[in-house]
Image 1: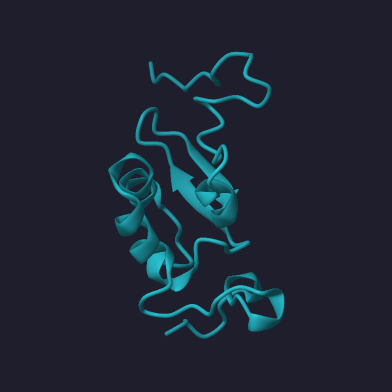
Image 2 (image 1 turned 90 degrees about the horizontal axis):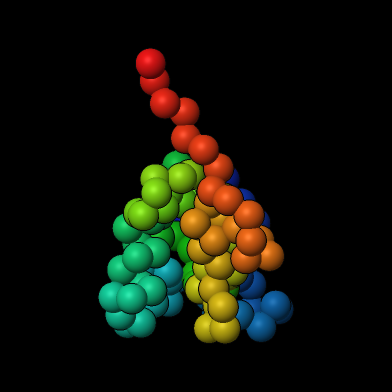
Length: 110
């Protein structure tokens, strides 16, 4: 069941060649099948206020909000980019683009 007003990118229509969202084809089910290294990490990091993991497929173009379990950094990334089999994306603070640079500094309260 999709919420009323769900973003169109979430709906994987058959015309695009993707299976439809269902109780057996959604991100939560995929994460449980793929195992703890990636699947459990993604479910822990899911922090999206609009949709839940069972409301999108792993190939969705929905830009979800995630919160890194290592550094606590909040960031947005496409679900499909985080679940791809070759080099899934991760936290931009822990893994800066290009592999170099430094982590953004967190604000320290006085």
